Length: 86
Image (cartoon, rainbow, N blue to C red; front, side, top):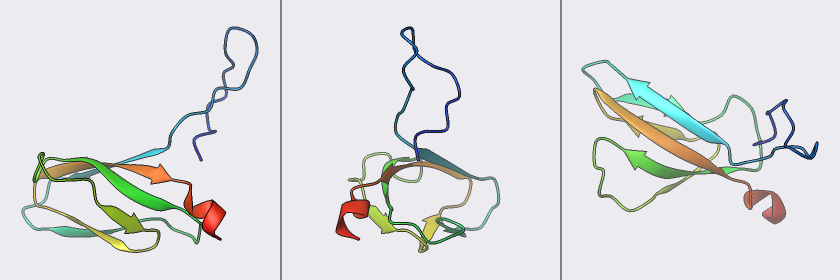
């Protein structure tokens, strides 16, 4: 994760960064969004949620549901430190 960039840096080094998940809900109802299609050792941390921009970051385990509010957007960041716990 975070290693999907094909380009290289100025000195030919791989470019690696954080992995983000952007969720959009245009529906009038809340949508429970499943985080991840397969098992991985990763957690997801909220960076921003338009439903409550002032809320503290929350941690969601992989393969759990994120309650994406009606007509909202959320950005989550992958926390790969879960790999060391596995």
